[in-house]
Amino acid sequence: MAGDVRTAIQQVLDEIEKLEAEDQQVVVEIVQQRLIERRRLEIAQNARATVQAFREGRARYGTVEDLRRDLANEP
Image (tube, helix red, strand yellow):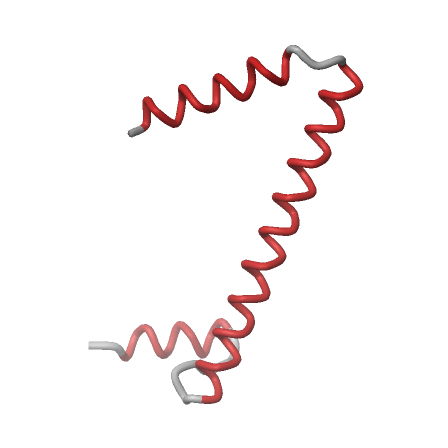
């Protein structure tokens, strides 16, 4: 499977290399923006899950010292 991914990536890179330098830069910018947007969505999903866990009593908040105490008291 990893070989298939490497082959696909190499094919994409080969095609990008055929583009003019300016177009290559556009591709880079598009990929960067998509990665940023993907990360924003992940952060938003994590935030929603955290709020839900807090509402359900599965999450708590406190200081680092509170966390240390909780970890020390776990079986």
